[in-house]
Length: 174
Ligand code: ZN
Image 1: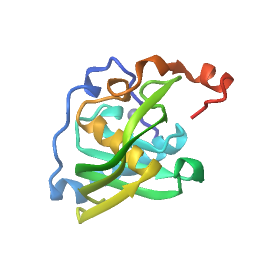
Image 2: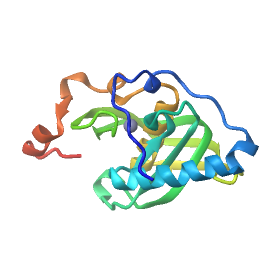
Image 3: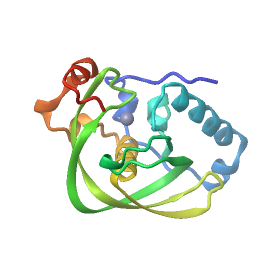
Image 4: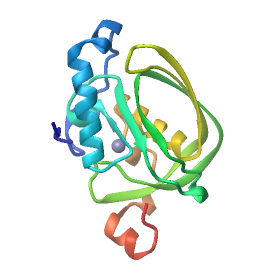
């Protein structure tokens, strides 16, 4: 089932989220939710989708990236779920164009840490540690920001904020 993706201005994007219990994670409701979020992300299409974006204040996000763009350190990332994540950032800050399914039609240059370590639970409530760099690190920071009620516009270089159409014209499409 395709879920409705809420747009900027909806309070749920700013409200913050609560953790899921292990019982909730392995239960039928959350398992179904993960499937629906996967379908919704693929349909959008996007490389990540956080629960607040479909109106739920829960610490859960799905991620999947099929693209290979070596100059952005972007490699295919298989579908997976991060639940109750904590984030530690490292390395230098790197600025790249970034968009969001909840800010449809816009993008901006956003500085992000080059490397991250994320500790989270997977879709079966098993603890996982993810060490990521490059574009995958950017996706993780973007999605975990959603869980903390933050959007990329809070971090962007404001003078680079643009419609996606104008970015395409300038050859800076994300
Ligand atoms: Zn987003």
